[in-house]
Image 1: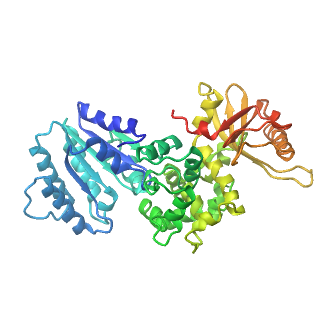
Image 2: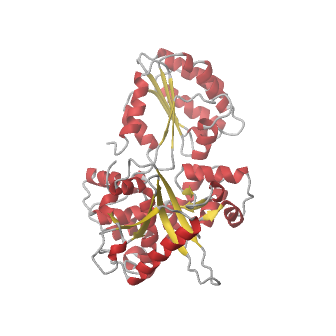
Image 3: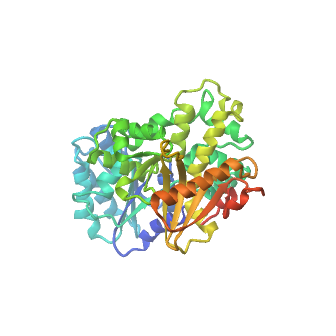
Length: 474
């Protein structure tokens, strides 16, 4: 059963109605459901399906490719010694097929592109020199190595340049999608519990398959991460190595960003990660953005060259906070239910969930028809001028000359605006006005779990967004 992939599935199905051959690339981070989407959309309609070998050399890859050709009915005597000949055999299989549309699915494409194998040249020759001239071939490729897909397929500067007919960037689930998935599995938990789970694992569909019926959120998290045989105990080691060819540099970037809540400028990041400030660093950051690990934002009132990079991936943040030191207690999460370290994490993690659901926030604010830009903003304290520092993680700048300053507060009850909160928010309003010289109207917004309780300081808040609002399906 496909959850929340209707548009992507429809795009794939459109390929069957096209008048010419189609070349479609599906990419996205590890475990996001690329292969599942393709198989659920087409069922048993493939005339050929193959997946590359994770650690196989060229000979192993060709042998496996030949075995797949045989499995789909081609009589092959000898294993080809190069990829040009291997794709000639694939042509034979396609020609012999009686299917109206010949759907060919090649998964884990990057693993087939071994050193000096000539795989990409053969793929280019197959598509440019033969398949694209027909009107009945649907070639679908994907790989977990997102950087390879972006470099070699999506942004190819060689023979495959501008040859894709479609591309699908498969993104993680939103809260509403996770809820729909749990319902489909007969798992009934509250939205508050779904929110807490999302704060730990984000919207990666595969991670949600480990949520077990009948267990509390704390028990599920313990079982997933902290138990002796926890299925996700070593996920971090595999995550970056499966996505990127030189994972250590990508890990260095996210590690540096994981230490700074507000994020880092490009120069700060280069220094903290120990990577030269060059085009290579740009490539790393762009790919991490494409995979949803980090976000790039501009502080309100500043120029794009002053952009900030911030770690936003839920699982990675959870790993740095709780898993990197490898806690030995298999009931770690249950024991720390009310601990200060967990409560601090909840506040930060909730902010990241809100950043994932800005579209839902805009719907609740009634500004979907207004052109907006999303920013964050911060100012450093100045002791000489007796000016306090200020930080706003979400600023929605509207073309109707309004700034929505979104305060994101995680709470187990309705949130109460205290005198300290009131002073802090007023300080932020003054600070952003002075620093940006804006003449926009400023509307403070509270985004919290259960809403706002009435109090003597609650009048400063002009709009309230609850966790329920973040579950809206758009």
